[in-house]
Length: 476
Image (cartoon, rainbow, N blue to C red; front, side, top):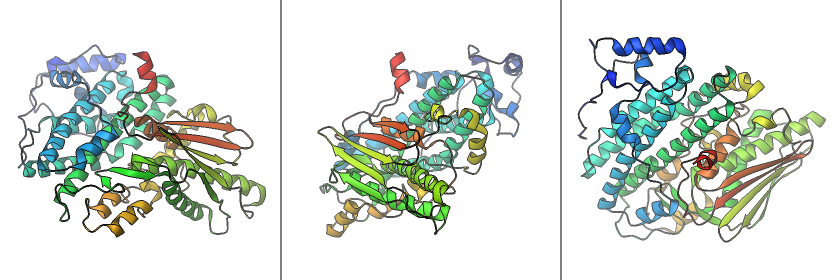
């Protein structure tokens, strides 16, 4: 049984009333704070928004965790740490995750508390806040992990939280759209908040899923301590030699299959042409790479098909999508070029924003059809492992990891969406994924002709995760 710290010692009178409130809500909150406590401090969740008001203010325990800075990691650190996995290292990994998750959650909870109250009272933000506080409260109570049994129980908690938090991205997106439509806060501030909270979400899932994967590896019947990892293997969730061309081919096949199901078998599909440094590879988290490449190809395929359909009903094969891979000493750049007509001037100002201006209602309606989203390429259902991974397994006598489970875990069909349902989140989310490991994602549109997108990856894996947005770093 995993040991937990005692119950939360918080007092409702320790409310931090420095946060901005809407006038009527401020009076109601003060009255609630002064009310004698005749029932449990944290009652069961009710359906009314008023039931949550008492949870929006800081208590001393949260202040303690907010004062602790996150400890960023790099892909190289993940690789080196997991390369020589043993019981001691697994326990160390568990304790890093145990202390790091509540730190990162506490900072995001504080971010939500410092927004105007009429913004965070939005029911979608409210649900995310509840999920975050529940996770923070549970993780902060976990004692030091000392045994493998402790670790197994801890992994059960992590897995449960990861599943519960699949609703976070759609909820945040709907909250942003509703808030921006009501003009409660400028779009720039809402985007800054969204970027910070999503980047932090990625960071938490990286360290949590990495530890779950290492634990799975350790318990694999084929695992042997001290066995060298092959260069084509995974270490946890990190794919040591992620091949850019291989990823483009697999994602391209998946996207074309989706397009066929969306537009019908009679519509001609474009060819995806690949050129450049096709042997370029680098360490990366495969699900991140697949999400970015999949979204870029999805956008291009949809654009060229729909442009061709406007011309002749889609009977003629549309122009190809050109994908060029360029490898340098420190970086790999993937360029995706299409002749899909470019991006409309009415859409371009909102391209990288989660606030969609006049398009908000349409996007909001679409989001209601996606109750959960993992923000991986699960949504395009890639179900085949990378070529280099398959090759390594055919040549391997003793597997270092549990490969089939390891790969499938990031691509299992936990979530799905109709293939032609547009959420307006693909490019903003892809940029967050790209910048998380110190990469970049830029786009050039020529209206009436097409689009060029440039995705740059750090090749060495020695850059720490980027937990702050560029705007936040510029403000420091």
